[in-house]
Image 1 (cartoon, helix red, strand yellow):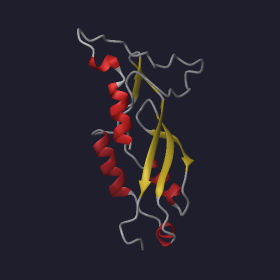
Image 2 (cartoon, one colour; image 1 turned 180 degrees about the horizontal axis):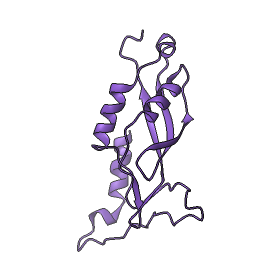
Image 3 (cartoon, helix red, strand yellow; image 1 turned 120 degrees about the vertical axis):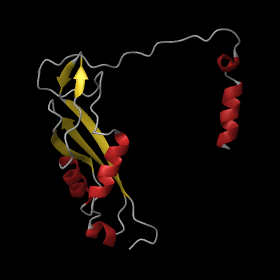
Image 4 (cartoon, helix red, strand yellow; image 1 turned 120 degrees about the horizontal axis):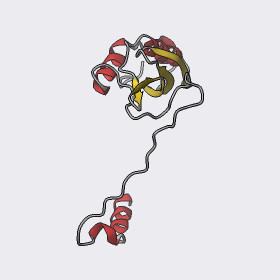
Length: 147
């Protein structure tokens, strides 16, 4: 059903099949302007913070350091915990907090792992190091078979 709807929408869109040179439409800038408070954390910057080694290294770090809480295992709790934190100008992690938890001790465990991360490459705005807020989902999934 979804495939049929997708094909219909593609066929009804003449711009996808138009002849001639492609038109490039610049994306709007989403860079945050400097805040009144120099210590306020940015949410979007020109150069976003990065975990050492990149996203794959971050996933490997999290998976090797996370411990599935026994209460969550016993109650078969699965889902994503969303953690918000600030990557400071020196790359350290600060102001970590749970945005959305799933219970069973998963929120506390996700927060523990985020707070234990090594220093990141900090974010930059207009060539200057800035505090940058970062949101990270951490998924808890039991192996098949539950307990």
